[in-house]
Amino acid sequence: MAVDLDALRKKLAQLSGQNSRKNLMWKPSTDAESVVRIISFPDNDGQPFKELWFYYNIDNNPGLLSPNQFGKPDPIQELINKLRSDDTKESYELCKKLYPKMRSYAPVIVRGEEDRGVRLWAFGKTVYQELLKVMLDADYGDITDPKSGFDIKVNVSQPPGKIYAETSVRPRPKSTPLSDDKAKIQEWTTNIPNLDDLYSLKSYEELERIINTWLSDPSDGDDKPRGGARPAAAAEKKPTTGSTLKDLDDAFADLEDI
Image (tube, rainbow, N blue to C red; front, side, top):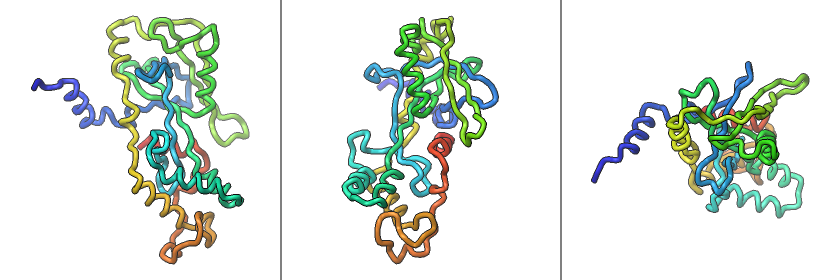
C-alpha cells in the first residue's frame, strides 16, 4: 500500500506543534484595527460558520463540549431537563448556570499575517449576528467568496464604564479577491483547520463524574450543595476556582488558550 504523504504532513505538523489550538486560533488585537478575510467551512450545509455548544464554569473546566448537540447521551442535559420540571427558584438558578452557551467559528486569513495560513476566529453571539446581517445585505452578499468577497475590519474597544471589551465588525466598501495568487487561494481553501480536532468530547461517564463532583461542592461558600443533600465526604470541600469566572468571555478566553 502506498504511503499517504498528506497524512504524514499532518502528523509532522501535529508533532511539531503547528496544529496546536494556540497556533490555529486567532484573536483580534486590542491595540489596533485588524483586517481579516473569512473563508467558508466546506461541507457545512451551506453555512459559512460553525457553532459549538459548551458547558462552562463547571469545576475547574473552562469549557465542556455538550454531547447533546451531536445527538449523544448527555448527563448534564439530563440534569437540566430534570431541573426544568422542578418548580423552585433554586432549580431555576442552577439551570441557568448549567445551560450550554454557543461559540461561533470562522476560518480567516489575517491581512498582514498571510504567511501563517488559515486560522480560526471564535466569537460570540453579537459578532455572529452582525456578520450574518452583512451577508444578508444586498450590497455585500457572500463576503466569503474567494473571488468577489469582502475583507472585514475588526475593532476591539473598551467603552467607558464597561468592564468587558466590545468587538465590532465592518466590511470594507470594495470587493477584492482572497488573493491575487490562484495557487494561494487553492492552498488556503483546501487547508482549513478541522474544528473537530481542536476540542475533545468527554465520555458520558467523565461528564457524569465532573457534574456530580461540582454539585457536591458548596455554593457561594455556604453549607448547602448545589444539587441536593450534601454527602458527608464533601463536607470539607471548598468551592472550585471555576466558579469565580465573571463572564462567558473569560471562560472562553481560557478555553481557547489551552
